[in-house]
Length: 252
Image 1 (cartoon, rainbow, N blue to C red):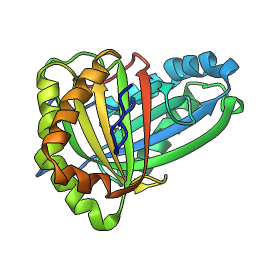
Image 2: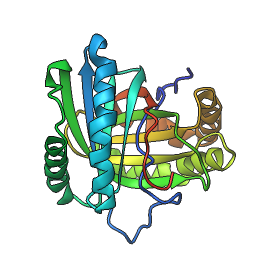
Image 3: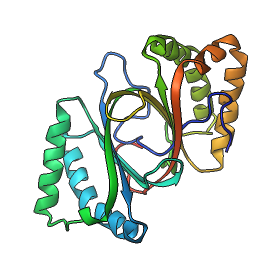
Image 4: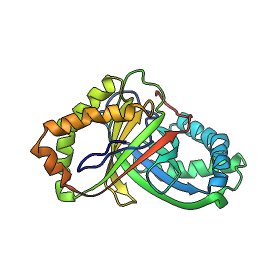
């Protein structure tokens, strides 16, 4: 796998669910993403995913039909990070987070969901604001999600986001329209975790990851000193790659 130098690489599994395959509209409020990471004992992972599929997915599907959430997705770990299961629930606004969690717990209880807490070895939650989403019309399932996480200095965030808009995003759009990716998303931190900005590459397959990065590397190289400034603007970085569990909702 290629790595940015000196930036390192980016992305892993994630969302792409419940949104129309276009860029998010600036006049609309940004949705929020509740991201949960779980470390499940290896011996229990198959049972954990079975419980998710049999009990959690029907509850989430009902919640989406009722308008409580915009969408959801989950993935198994492929590379990077300390967790092996990632679950995402997308809600229309901050105030919907607690309502959605209460509804999920209630629906799971009503369905007689077995207690699977004993399978959990570690767990953490993050909340992100979804500030950008771009998906190619007619794109299929996101087989993999590549997540690049950064802790950008607060004093550099404006510069970082400007660079993304003017240099990075056009390269990502080109890679998407050329079929190298299904799309991409940007999330900015609201609560939990050590990072404050993350990019998600929505990948149709594993083999396309390097090709998608080639397009981005070319844009970085062409931006010269601007990229050098970007590379000095963050204090921490991590990459994860996730394989999507093949249940997604919404238009994608």
